[in-house]
Picture 1 (cartoon, rainbow, N blue to C red):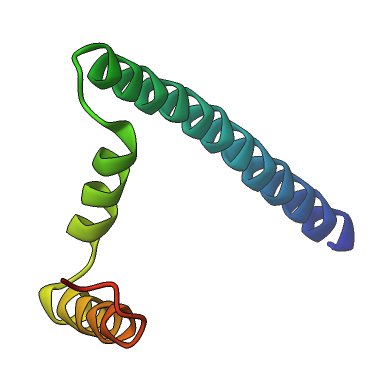
Picture 2: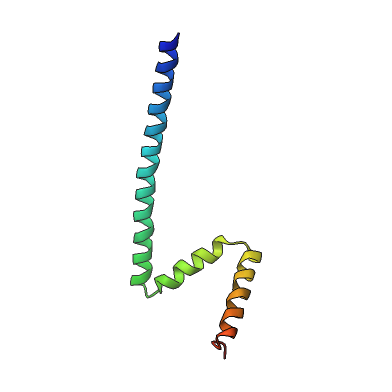
Length: 83
């Protein structure tokens, strides 16, 4: 009975490890694809730093983005960086 439990645990652990390894490979491939898209955008004259910022902003919800923009504007005003 205990051998069965150990065998099941071993098989389950092996399955989990193999799934993680497969997902890590997929993640690596996707990262390469994303890098290629940024390279393509740069070759077409787009500013990749600005694109990365746009992507980051689109991930945030509107309220969070407005709050960050307000804090940034407050700091910039305090430092005399606005107009």
